[in-house]
Amino acid sequence: MMKHEIKTFGILGGDKRQLFLADSLLRDGYSVLLGGFDSLRSFGGLTISDVRTTLAYSDAVLLPLPSVRADGSLNAPFANNVIYFDGEAIELLKEKPLFVAMKDRLLSAYPDLKGAKLYDYAARDDFAVLNAVPTAEGALECAMSAYEGTIAGSRSLVVGFGRIGKVLARLLKAVGSDVTVSARNTTDAAYIRALGYRFVNTEELREIRGYDLVFNTVPARIFDDELLKNTDRHTLLTDLASLPGGVDFEAASALRIDAQRALSLPGKCAPKAAGDIIKTTVFQIIEEVHR
Image 1 (cartoon, rainbow, N blue to C red):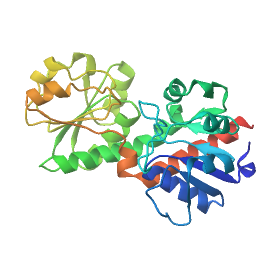
Image 2 (cartoon, rainbow, N blue to C red):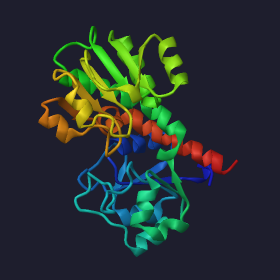
Image 3 (cartoon, helix red, strand yellow):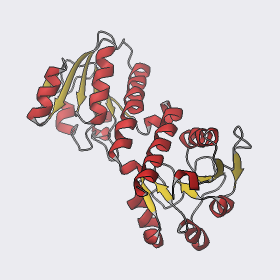
Image 4 (tube, rainbow, N blue to C red):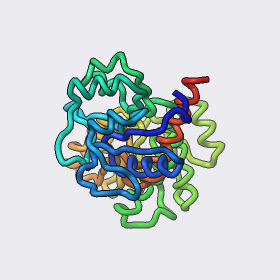
């Protein structure tokens, strides 16, 4: 199904990202139905509907990130009630393109959707790269809110040189922080030094000393009890890694280390940009499928 064949997008559940996504689609000339937003009486020119109507009258369906919660219910914070997909809803979902996030979790909750036209926009590299910018900006906002000093003149450590680590290190340096970045391989080490940052090997981290701000982007338990015991107590530690994360928060609390978990930052700090990123990625998927 090409973009010009889609007249109506159905958006089920989600937070402010989906509201801005819906508004952007509306401005592009599409009709949009919102399901799972019962607590909103209206949102601009958008049509607030129920889940069944949204499924029945849409040409393609967009689910949020994550699409379903751990218990299988739709991720719909604006809904008045918990929403599960029944047999009729499953059949409607299987009739049209379904753009989802965390497809494996969705299929685990609803195995009957295995025959549906599922496209996981959140699993794509282009989505992850675009999403790194609002994530990094959100991380900086979190640090500015919690840190009692200024970012300018601070000493910061970014653990991990992936998509988010690259953007975050650049932002920190731009606002005047003395930035150190940790990574594992020699190629990353060369890039880190070439970009003007200090380098440490992640595998050789035995202590965290002399840093005001530490940001973890690695989805592995880096900051265990042993490393936290050798971390300065004044350091603000922000974990950006997806659950279960890279920080032992129980140990951090016991050691009185100021640690904070910062998840879903694009939706909290830049929902308009995050909504546009979802739209861009979905449109790219549609074009690729029909080349």
